[in-house]
Picture 1 (cartoon, one colour):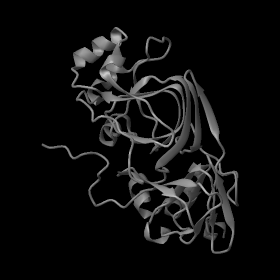
Picture 2 (cartoon, rainbow, N blue to C red):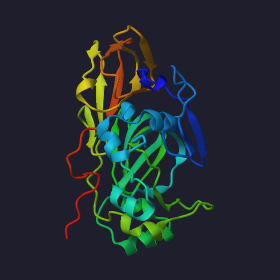
Picture 3 (tube, rainbow, N blue to C red):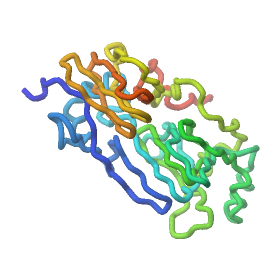
Length: 315
């Protein structure tokens, strides 16, 4: 039977969507309005949602299946930002589930390239009142309240629920929870797009944010929604996937590499490529094919019995 056939690593077609500020190139997404289609291997032509419906925990592992069911839990996309995005805020999972029957959104932004006006806006520079923020939006002077960071290629920043954020003149790799639930707070004077300021007011963290600093260690993110490791691939690396109970996603940010199965079958990645390794693919090697190769590895770590996606609410 076909369902007994062992799954193999998969690449997916690109889905590019245009916005006033540039383009979003979805590389791995199970969002309904975007459903990535496999383009290599015996599942070529199948969508990610169809693969999830058929193969369930064989794709993602038992931990992910327990929490997310047949929803693939992360998305990977590239944001090619030529102008400036709207100022947004994302809800946490608890609020998103209660109000919108959806997941919230935590995201990792990895800087791929920067233009001359490159800037990331990440949180408030000081404590701000709701009234002050509302007035600043109306008077188009929100920028005065925000941290404005000049990014550099190779840096990574974590965008958490409640943090107001925007980006300008930069290409970003975004690794995030499988959700696009966000709220537009301000559009820098542009007209024609809906603003959700009143609806999202109680989602905003008005406190002074920590000064944005690029993440320094190779463990870029360890949040309940996903874990991301940066791998400088200097020599062949044996997988420990059999110990993880998780899918793995590899994004090649520099150089080139091959994922080699025990059958000697190779799956090649060059800069910009994304490869999904199903949970049941346990044994493989990562082999560098360039002297300067870097990969980001994405997985979902096991959770304790209590759901840590959202902070517990004190009674």
